[in-house]
Structure formats: structure tokens, C-alpha cells
Length: 298
Image (cartoon, rainbow, N blue to C red; front, side):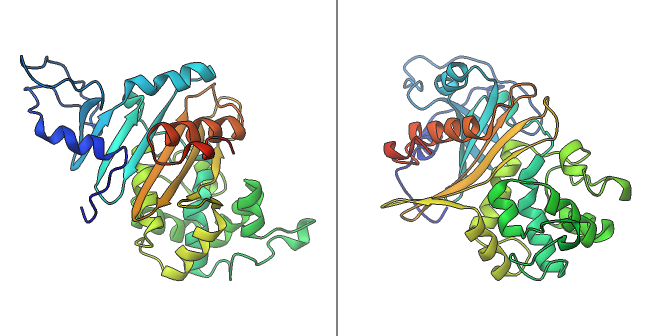
């Protein structure tokens, strides 16, 4: 949109020169499958993947990269979103539009809501000091824990939580009733798709969400993972609270003037541990030329 770069999602922009035959689009939000054949003499698209339409976001499906899931013995989906070019790359495209509980990745909006509403004064405030050893939002995000965030949600309250989740346009916006306040992101009814995760993160990475910029900058520093010579990587891991839950790794990469957000989700029953999710995600980011090869291992 503003920047013309040479990253992997730009490969999807090259597909704009190809005419799609009738019925050959895959709409992410409706799940309509695509079919049809290439016209004789049309260039081979195998190097860039199959074109996919996501409303106003153009994308390609990279079926060749599904081998990363296969080699790890898990099933899942991966979405890479070019926030500047508004294009995406999908691996496991059939699952990219399917919603699942966000698990502990909801700590991101929960932190923003807590700061914006004043439920927590800052990311270093000690929470629950009367329940044993208290922790701050900073410490809890680093440990990917949930205990602090349950109390933070209680402080926010059901009405304010519902208002802000709706304002963020976060997934299906479902926070349930007041009895669900401490668990709606881990057990439902709140659900979000991988594409929705990636687009929400684009707003956060650019400090364009409808909360004070200082709160978004504070959260950005909390989820900073590493900084290389020409890139910076951000992102926590997330999961539900039982063995059958989906596993997530979401975040973004800043490299030169490029911004790519991503969302990896493993299917139910193949959650794996946080290390596996991050190593898989890094593998996709390296294969798509978003991270340098030396960043493949955490």
C-alpha cells in the first residue's frame, strides 16, 4: 500500500497479472473452495503458490510448505500478513479462516484493556500480592502464565471487557456472561482465526489500535523476543487450558521498512509445547524470507 518491497508476500502481488477463471477464488471468510484450470500458455504459478482472495486482502496458498507441519508430526495453519502491501501467504489455507479459542494470546488485548481502563496502573504493578507471591503483567507475559490475567479480567469487569473486545473487532467478540469472565479466552465462547490474529497484530505493531499509543508501546516492549542486525522479532505463545486445545504462536517481524505479522495455530490434539510452536513458526518465517536463516532456531 505504502511500500513496495521484495519480501515473500510480495510474491502474492505478482499474481495480480494472472486472470482468475470463474469459480477459482477461495474466500477466506466463507470457505468457498476454488477450482478450474489455467489457460493454455499462462505462466506456471507453482513458484509462488495458488492465488487466494480474502476480501480486500490478496494472498497465495503455499501448499509446498505444508511439509514443515508434516515433518513435525502436527497439523495446523500458518498465516503471514504483509501489513504494508495488505497481502498474505497461507499455509494450510483451509484452516486459516477457522476460529478457535485464543488461549493465552488473549493476554495481548487483555493487557491493553487493563492499561486503558486503569484496571492496572502500569505493566510493573504487582497483582495479587495477598495471594502469595504476586506478579506483574511484565512477568506474566514473559512466563506465558494465566493467573495474573484472570485477576486482571476481574478488575476490568464484564461490561468494560465486552465493550473493548467489540471495539477491537477481536474474533467473534464473544466474552460470554459474567461467570465466564475468567476463562472465556481459554474455554470459549471467544474464538479468533489465524487471519484475524494477524490483522489485529498489524494494528498493534503500528500503534493504530483505539487505545493510547503509550499503552501499545509498553506492550510492544513486553513481547519483544530478539533483535538481529536487520530485524526485530516480537511475539508470545498461547494455548488453551487442556490437552486438546489449539496451540498458537503469533507476533510480527520488523525488517527495514517492512512489517509482517504472523499467526501459527496447531490443530486440536496436536498442540505440542511452546518450543515446538516457536520453532515451526520460525521455520515458516525463514522459508518465506521474512527472517534470516540464522534466526531459524530460538
